[in-house]
Length: 66
Image (tube, rainbow, N blue to C red; front, side):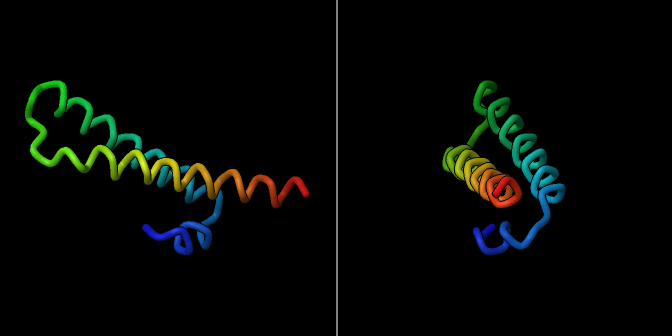
């Protein structure tokens, strides 16, 4: 998901999206641990998606604080 799409969402929507990504990341970790992971790049993609959402959440929190 692009940054502009994330910035258009409310903090509640971002929090739920973050939860979904974290669940996906957990599933990927379990697959990697069991040796079933075939698309190893997906772990990196999920990690970066978490960072994007957290960054947008921090920006929105800073806007409210100012």
